[in-house]
Structure formats: structure tokens, C-alpha cells
Length: 298
DNA sequence: CGGGTATGGCAAA
DNA sequence: TTGCCCTACCCGC
Image (cartoon, rainbow, N blue to C red; front, side):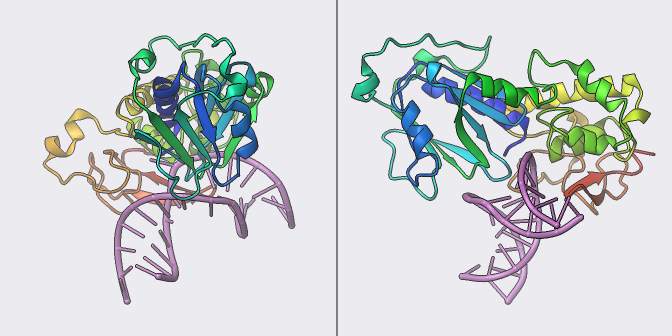
């Protein structure tokens, strides 16, 4: 589910399936019917991801801006699309262009370097359904830039300026736990990566940003880059080091709907994989924070 | 089947 | 800070 790694993976997967092709778009329940009609039959020329924001580019027609929020989800299918199940906000389906845009020259498909599967390999009918997003809207290039302008650097983007994040963190008395979740400071980190990166770096979540050393911040950032890249690759969040996997430790694997192996997230009251102490939880800004006091001393 | 919870974010108070 | 958005899944009954 949706932290930044999910969004970057979706940008790759949607481009891989639909990039360079005329895409039929629909919003069966009408919640995005206007926007869907405006891009229907156009070629998906590009996708982009910044933090938790996904952008689907339709050449000059603009970008479909998607934010999954807490519940939003894309599901992909092969073959002719079936009747939509439930509230489908946006359906993408490969198919023929409608008559009014069929004669237009196809725009060139731009690709981010090295990202995603090969477009031309896609031959069969495919579709994707989007349910439950907090945001799904058709926007202009300027509006896209405005959205991105409000976001901090994204550890998954090559153009990320980690120094910009540090300049905000180092001047703030807010806790590092809150700063990591602030999308204006760092874009793409959610509750799982926050808890896990602070644990891995041995940093007390309640320390103020201004109390961190540059080395500590650089360590956090580098770890986020590594963890989140792995997240894109696996399409899930795994954060335990090789020596702490269930196999290495002879412990039962984590069993829940998240799948990935983690140190502290949603492990309140259970023993820390490293020190054996009790993992703690507390509310912080309407979210649950998890940490190990012994491994993350004040 | 109902209640609780969730990897998010916004507006209102 | 709270409520709301709105979907899926888990658990207990």
C-alpha cells in the first residue's frame, strides 16, 4: 500500500502497460467522468512520481494527478476488462481511439532513464482500475509543477536535494518523527518507513530536528534511499537486515496483510529483534509511532 | 456480519 | 486536535 515506493512502482507499471498506446479511460460511477472523457483515447505519453503523488501524462491534454491517500489502490488485469466491481474511480484500458482523436499524430513517448518494463513488449489487452483515491483530477503542466513545488525532496528521485531537507530539519524544534512525515520536508516517507528508518539508525523519534547532527541526517537519508529503492523493487516494505530475517533468527515470519519484514512497525509489546526489549507505541500527530527505547536511546 | 484498524491528508475548529 | 473522506481486511460473535 501507499508510501512513496508504491507510487514509484505504479508509475513504472502503468507506463509499462499503457505507455505509447491509446488508452480508453472511464469513470463508471461518474466521480471522474469529466476528466476521464477529456483524455479518453489519447496516448499515455509519460508517468511521473513525486513523493506520494502519481502523475499520468497524456501529452498536451495534461496530467491525471492521483493521490491514493490511505485506501486508494490500483488493480491490474489482463484481457478484456470485465464489468467494474465496486466504486471504480478511473479505469484505464488499452484499446482503439475514439474517432475524434484517432487521426491525431501520436506524441512521442518519453521514458525516464532505465525505468520500467519495455513498452513494445506489451501486446495483449490490459486494464487497470483505481479505487478509493483521495485525489484523482486532470491538471495542467503548471498545476503539476505547483503540486511538486509544495513537496520536499523525494529519496526515490534522482533530482532530490537532500541538503534542502537538512536545512529545514536542522532549523526545526519539531521531533524528527514528525519531520519525517511532513511531505514538505521529505516526500514519500510514511508511517512504516518513518518507524523503520529511525530504528535502523538508532535515533530516538522524539529528538528535535535541530538536535540531529549532519552525519545522523545523512545516515537517515542514505538509508531511506536504500530502503525505498528496495521497496520499489519488491513492491513491499522490507527493512530487516540479513542477520535479522526470520530464517537467520529462527523465528516465525511476520504474517499480516503488509507482508514485509520489519523491526518495530505494528510490533508494540513484542520483543525487539535485536535487544529483546519491548517495542513501544505512542500516538504522535494522529498516527501511531513505534520504537524500541533501548535501541533508540534518548 | 459488525466493529476496529490502516502505509494519508485535508479542512474545520 | 478532531472529523471526514472512503476501501479492504481482520477478528470476534
